[in-house]
Image 1 (cartoon, one colour):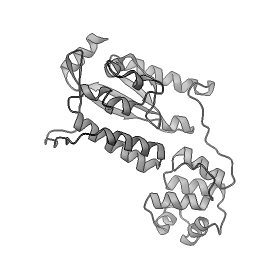
Image 2 (cartoon, one colour):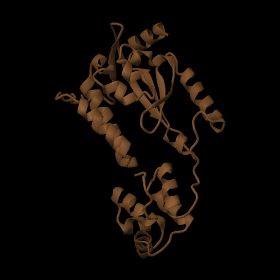
Image 3 (tube, helix red, strand yellow):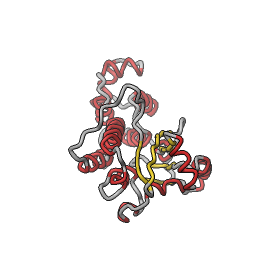
Image 4 (cartoon, one colour):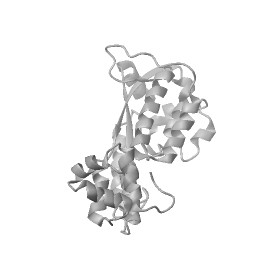
Length: 260
């Protein structure tokens, strides 16, 4: 819900409340203020303090990027920094990420930003980038586009319908959470790649959707996990996601060790 022009803070807060499908009473109870006060803030009859803006944003689960926008709209300075990942201030974060990626070898792992652009990766992702169209490998490489584009990895994914359905469902949840128009555009683009095939109904013993693909004539089956930083105070850090892939069977584990 990042704004390209300045709107009153009350209007922005009302937008986030409605987006979260909360009534004024629901929000007032969470923040422990009166419904009247929430109403006055939203209509501009009351100017919220800096602390009140932050309290409302916290209970509305507003992303840090958009909390800064709320503060600016309320006449206050942003409190969350937004540092380049390559700035000196982010050295500890870069070091941590690279150690994590290296420790995950020989299995693939990558770090993406809010829009799924790859910002760091280990050598294991060569199984994903092999034989894809060069246009998809131009920076910034978008991990979801690389996976689902017909000229990307899609042609080597043997359970493409299942993977596509899972990826789109996850991205849709992210769109709902952030109200980010760029993510909505990405979602619409990826949906446009979809064929008419339907994902298989999961069996009673299935607990996750495996990522099955071929590489150099060999079959690989992977499971994926996504992690984030637990207590971020920087916009960039709050939006980083670490996606780690693990072998789903012994044959895949052995093959990845040989490839390394």
